[in-house]
Length: 244
Image (tube, rainbow, N blue to C red; front, top):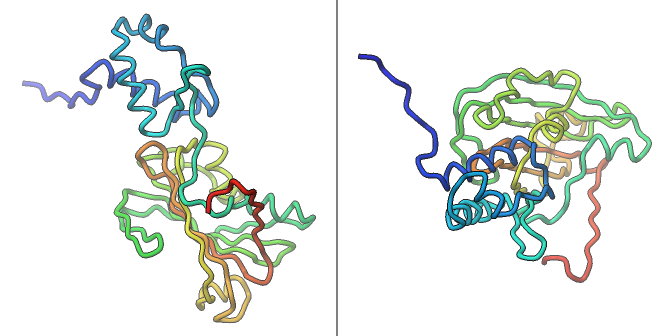
């Protein structure tokens, strides 16, 4: 008798359609704004009823991966931010925008086993990760300390990425499409490790940004960024229709 590996293929046609479209979206083959083939075309491609296709598309819409519009058709959704107060700028772009020289140094870079990662007061039990602690500077002045987990179940290629010169956040934006994110912003006092790394006094004011990013149902990354309060600011412009 031979042992056979379990069959993980979808058992229903609508699930197969959903999985195949989802794979194209999450791989980046179909980027945000890409028009999904109309249902009549999918019916012909898969040789199924319109109800089967509609069920698959409804599932993708519920996950936030696509936007359906009777007149405009169905397109790949753009990433959305939950409870977003500010759009956090890319640290490198922000530094260079001010005419300063950006610097990056990885202090710790290691593979970690499954563990509980805290985001604010909540703990998240997640799989293997690559953990990078780094410091980002402006004209040689350290302005941000970052602790980042990249979860290898969602991003297996991150295990082999070279983060000695390229910041992991920049690498993720370039290589890994995501579907949802949430972040938390708080004012904190510098603890000893933060103070030593950012070259400030213990207790000095800092800005804390914590973010979790998903791709579908998988967590891509959890990051904790501590900005030196006297050397960095975040600016957002709000209109009358902005969420409160």
